[in-house]
Length: 66
Image (cartoon, rainbow, N blue to C red; front, side):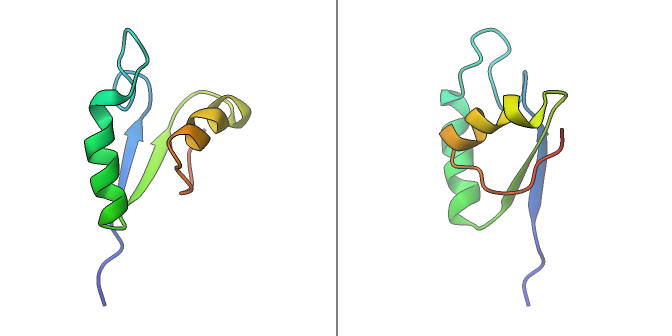
């Protein structure tokens, strides 16, 4: 049985560019996490309704921390 792997990351300045809030630079890593079935757990001070549009845009269905 394979171990459950996950990545926990802050959103602002890590997953999203600190200045533009773009995520183009993160797309290759996000794609690879998906291919390897590694969960991505976003962690942020935003509220759940504020985080949901980004989760939808990036197709993140894993749990999250707000």
